Image (tube, rainbow, N blue to C red; front, side, top):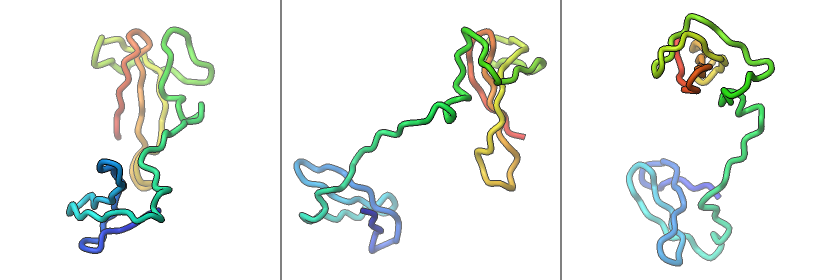
Length: 114
């Protein structure tokens, strides 16, 4: 169920109010009560990531197979000059990619934009 605000056109999100479910506009705050047909409204959904989607969260206790390391990148936390890195396209296709680093010494993760 996806509904838009009749006042401003923004997407409305479901929320619980006591034993009732209401829809609230994320922009202007307009509130609409959900009728009996809206009993199937999902308020929360747990997102399950595939292992390939988690590859940039690294376990630094052992080297990961296939994840490259680089020297000359300084960790902002401990000053180590070696890190694992992954390059991901996190923004629009016409924007440069994001480099995500994980320190090989302390495990701190940070990102750099070009």
